[in-house]
Image 1 (cartoon, one colour):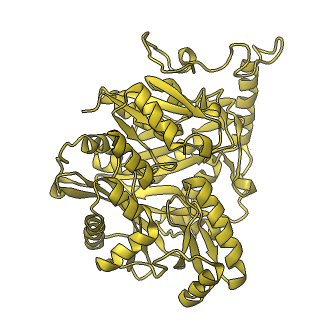
Image 2 (cartoon, helix red, strand yellow; image 1 turned 90 degrees about the vertical axis):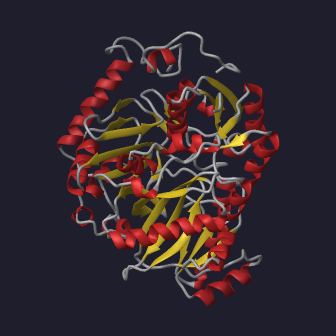
Image 3 (tube, helix red, strand yellow; image 1 turned 45 degrees about the vertical axis):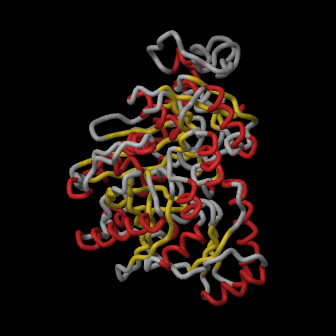
Length: 507
């Protein structure tokens, strides 16, 4: 087993991995950009190493600096989380050359499935049903235009080297294509360091259903059932759940077997997700492989009882899987809501700034994976996810009610968040009935505005209390977090703190 793991990420996923390391008795190393110096993942890790300025291209995407941080701290393995370098085959290959274990698939499998175009080619060869689309990346705009005419509009522009909705654009007519391709290239380049994009036929109003797979390096593989991820905006998931309301046992078995066949065709080991589109006639099509831990992995953990991060680490250390498909069961129902620092009433504009007050939900069946705290300043430079709120209950109806109650209990002041919007989503009659697809948000929540009433009065009262606390009860100059020693420190934010914390650099 590893003595020390470097976490090559930030935010809530870095906190999640650090916690898993702590439970396993493994020392953890955080890396951080200049703007993340006081972030929660930095405070929680055993060591922390600065890797550059705020832009991701100068810090979290700098393979050389991350590898040097691993070398200098003696980390035996690197966990990439999701996003940034998590699906970068070149980075996995550099880790292999350095003798540092990349906690994820090997570079060959990662190169195959991480390139969406090559993955499609492999799936066609293996007889997997796929969405019609290109099997190579066009070189010129004329080739894109010819391909779009051949597929028939609408088409969708997709990044070939990453996921998470980055680089995606729906194109409904020829005049929109060039701008969509250029915008997709820019976003893909900034998110993944690779600006190549390709085209697929856009299927109207499908469900987005994915299967979690675990495979070890000894030839054993299982799937941990499905996640329904149809509640999306801008092709980025907002709400995920399991089991899917659309699947029965027969369809679940067929899709699970297909997911495993996809991973076998790719020679895949470690945790990964096979994504499908499910049409109105219950036909499913391979979409892509996400060769990493998914943002929505907690719902699978709650329903199956399997700690996916722990399993990732064990597999990477060479341990056998120790799970049989026949032994796995879905118990109850879990729902996850992603909490973003965005203003849903203004087109989901990012909302950076200081968190003045934070009240987090608690209670039976409620889990919160968070990377923030009161007093921390949300930066503008990265994906604006703050936390993931996850609930579990005995059935879907109870899970919906529990999520609605938890969202009502969740208060973040100082910035805009998606909490109010998500509360309206999970209380919508069509969502409660399980009648969702990827067009749900566009149909039911176009021009959404948050209702004002008693909750607004409560928020104003809490805001006043927060401001009163910051200025010492109204006397003297207001205290600003981060100024004159009043900023967040481990002593203030983490409670009990033991001496002997090692750092490889000043933080």
